[in-house]
Amino acid sequence: MSSPAPRSNPLRLGVNIDHVATVRNARGGTAPDPIRAAREAVAAGADGITAHLREDRRHIRDADMETLAHVLTVPLNFEMAATDEMIDMAIRLRPHAACLVPEKREERTTEGGLDIVGAHDSLLSRVKRLGQAGIRVSLFVEPDEAVMDAARRLGAPVVELHTGSYCEAVAEGDAARTAHELGRIARAASYGAGIGLEIHAGHGLALDSVGPVAALPEIAELNIGHALIGEAIFVGLGQAIRDMRGAMDTARA
Image 1 (spheres, rainbow, N blue to C red):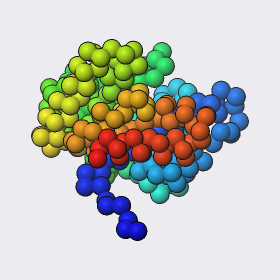
Image 2 (image 1 turned 90 degrees about the vertical axis):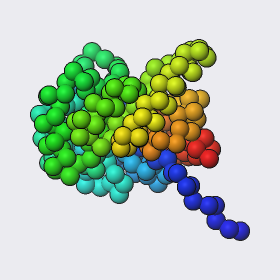
Image 3 (image 1 turned 180 degrees about the vertical axis):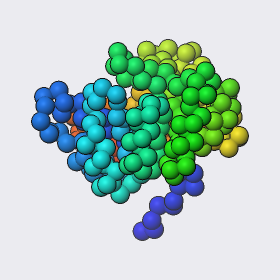
Image 4 (image 1 turned 45 degrees about the vertical axis):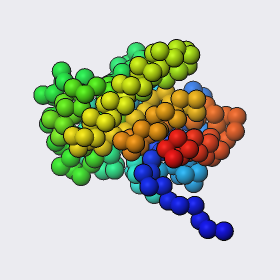
């Protein structure tokens, strides 16, 4: 039997392990181990691992990032606020990528994209420092054409489009809003790719919402965490990742 043909326009899956650490920290101690989760994710087909070291260390800890930077066999995507503390740590650890995200202590999870238009001046030097250290910079942003232009002006090679509003619309069963939000993502992805940006997407994606986003040919990578860790409670992490990978590949095909 011949092997399956390779995907002509492959879509990468980055697995976010933050909420393995959330469960660990709820009880204290060392279990469940996010490093073990990262290794199992890679074994199940993850193309990369994402971890967000927050200012308040609510889930991922400094020691987790240190270990991930040294043991991973796939790219590490270091999600972080655009602060001097985090920039310095990224430059020391040299992950494959640094994704700059907005961060507020009172939020449960990242809410909305980074304001790269209003914060252009403060971001410019930080993006430059990371790039000079050989770290690929990604900006977590709203799906908007003007924002794509702002990312280009900052010199960031990658944007990750915030899919949270789209996923909320899917969960609410609001067909009109779902179509509207998906249209925003599609237009931003097409425009951003057209001006030379690499397009990623993420936030809130699950098996019932991933397909239409995965089908957009301009998107090179999806970063997914909470849905995978939640589903892993019932089917195991490896199976949850394989199911997501299958849904992505089916949509992209």
